View 1: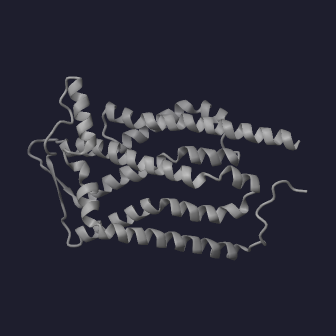
View 2: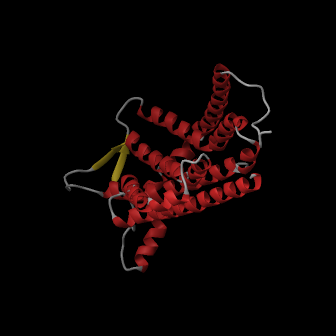
View 3: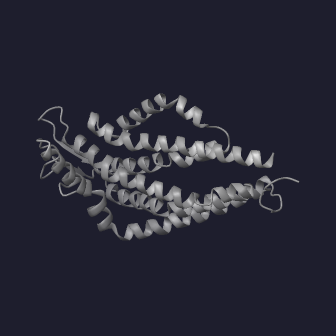
Length: 276
């Protein structure tokens, strides 16, 4: 008799699976649209407080960095106003920014539900022990995603805006940034960080299916560190301090992933011995 059989449901054809996937996607889309509508309504808060928050000297990150720099005898990050303006140069620029920002906010807020729909789609094909071992998947993945988004918003975004907003090749050039460019930077920093923080979850499932082992992760740790530094250089200003600030939590996540992979392998070996 097979151990831990898949969920006892009738076999579904390929078209049935596509139909099931379609409804999961529809429900996920509805959740994103509903929350995007809420974000659309709260335009003032979304833009004045969140989107343009990292542009203001009163942003918490700047205050903290300013105090830290002053303790070390520097005046970095201590300013009253960033020397650039944000402008919209197309007729539909502000409306398009409003729409896409609302959709982004809707996706971030609906992320746990989107994961829930994804889990409902894949879980029937898993064995009982696999579903049990991944019981906290939605909660853990959501927490990691939100932590990553907050890290991107409060750390990566202000570092990037401060550097790029004050950088000049000549005093003859004044920074007038397009609205879509500014929002694109904020969105990219937040979402990319949120996805990067899903690394432990990705490693967990890759280990479960046998594509990754702790030995593999340790062997290529140096290469992973180089990749982390490259990613940090891409999403942050090209200065050492900013890259280190971003790289440190990613390296910590990588080490946690090695521990998770080791735990998964240990559990699998224990079950194999018990069944053998």
